[in-house]
Image 1 (spheres, rainbow, N blue to C red):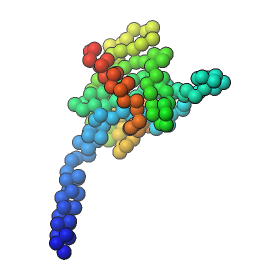
Image 2 (image 1 turned 180 degrees about the horizontal axis):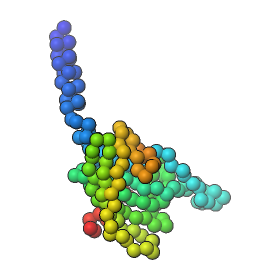
Image 3 (image 1 turned 90 degrees about the horizontal axis):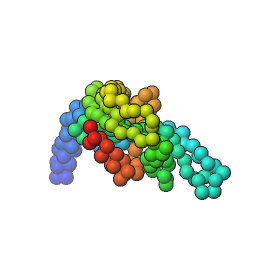
Image 4 (image 1 turned 45 degrees about the vertical axis):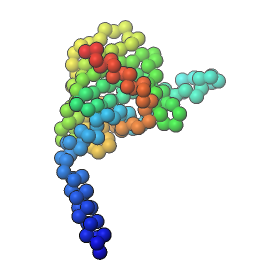
Length: 169
């Protein structure tokens, strides 16, 4: 009987405390410090008959990276599939890094960004700001008509090094 008198108030307190934050704040907490990748990726083996390179798989897509304090980064490149389902930023033949800020609204994320770095692209960097509105529902984010999901098996140190490019602004 004594256990019931302590258990129910504790359960009620935990339930209420998890419901206190409004949906926008909960979405902000879920976005901070996450990297998002397309839910369906068409991996390609460019050299299936080469003994050394046949196991390498590539796909061309953008990684969407969110940090606290509304910082945003997009890394557009060819990416490689590592061991298991780990994704590696391949950076070949080139990559582009866009940096900016994000704001969370009801069921959407508004991103304003500018290109800050690119490699192996003979076109000059445009300094024009770009605004994207992404739909956000639970663990799904829509960017340019493609469904994205948070990725937990990204090659960690490599993506952290890309944040250095965002300080060039």
